[in-house]
Length: 249
Image (cartoon, rainbow, N blue to C red; front, top):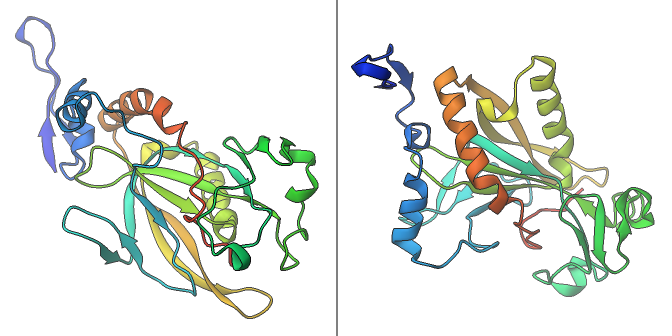
C-alpha cells in the first residue's frame, strides 16, 4: 500500500489517504490516460475489438488464459475493479457445430433489448429468446451474455470478461448481494474464480464464481468514478465477439 495526499488551499495538506499501489489507475492524474494512449497510438482510436478479452474455458477447465506483454499465462483467479458491464444478446441461424464458429451473429442486441439483423425487434417478446429454442433443446437460441470490463492490477485499460449463459445466474446473484448491502459494483475489488458443473446430459462445463476481495476506500471510489465517467462511452460501443463465450449447457 502506498500513501497519497490531496493538496488544499494556501499550502495546507489534508491527511494522507491510503491507496493500493497495485492499482495505479486509482492514483492516476486526470488526463494521464489520454496522454498514454496518444503516445502509443497517435491519432488512432481504440477500436471495438482491440481490448483484451477473457473467456470461460470449455470442458470444465479451471484456469483462465490471460494475454499479457510477455505472452499468455494461466491463472486460477482474476482480480480487478469492474468499471462497466453490459448484457448483450446474439443469435446465429447456423449452429456452431455447422459453422465452426467465428462468424458474425445474424441478429444481435448490444443492450440486450432491441435486436438488429434477422429477425430483429424487441428481445423480450422474441421467440428465439425463449428457453427450449436452442438446437440442442434446453437453452435459448438467442444467447444472453454478460460482459464485464475490469481493470486489473498494474493496468490502466480494462479487459473484457465474457460470461456465458451458464455463468449468468452466479453473476446475477453476486450483483444482487452487493445491492442488498448497498454496495455499488465498481466500489469493490472483485475476484473471478472458476467452478465446475454438469448439464443435464452429464457434460462438464466451467462457470464463473465471483466474490468480493475488499471495498475501495473513499479516495479510491472518487478516483474510479472519474475514470469510469471518462472511459464508459468507448466501452458501451464494444460489440459481441462471437468466439468469446462457451455456450455449453
